[in-house]
Image 1 (spheres, rainbow, N blue to C red):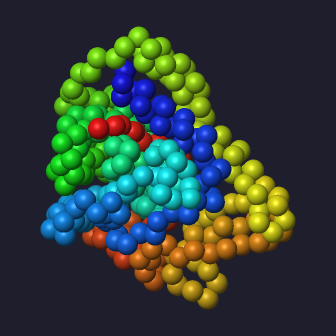
Image 2: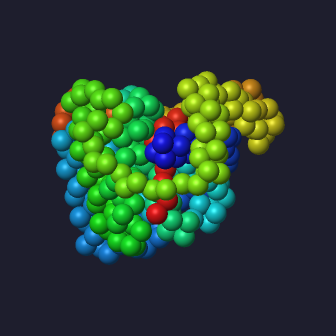
Length: 295
């Protein structure tokens, strides 16, 4: 019950704050795999995480990113971690832009929150499994502020229970085959709020793609003020670097932002091989799927 509540409430918050993502002043990625903005990892610990994520991408072609920050309120964007993670995922373009199978593990140390954001290519059943990774594997370690171990457990959990099975075409029912999460007692008020969140969250979550499209149409253009802003990954004329284009379909206004560490050539060229580990983010996107937790 707790896992489903957190998943739906996180997805609900992401949906409600989607219009803010286009205006967010988000941190630029400093690394292809590990971005420790909260400064809780040593260089050796970062290298260990980077190695695990590199090996996973070489094996499955799935790009995963780990990031820490102190709090979303330090940035001019969505203040809820779920919405912030969705905005950050899309701003960086994590994962292959065709398969949309990337993932982001994000930890906010001041607010003690965790988010596993999944690409738009994941079905909702994978959200349940992401929730179990948080509750059973990450929370017990992060509660003791064992950040390196908690993040390593998160990467291993996503790799074992989500990324590898997805790449192999294995299907599951909810959290089949996963470790149990520690039980927690909740009072009657929380139980009531959980029920209300489930009802509202199910409706919005089942229609998240349609709602996202509708909200996107209401982003104001800075030039003509029409609410017709769109975003799309591509290459700016005359350049080889993959960038994120924001443009107005009414007046033609546009702005380009190079994706961090984007290399030249076709960013999705690794789809035909298992080598992975390319030279840039692949332009993937998330529609708000994943799971959230606190520690």
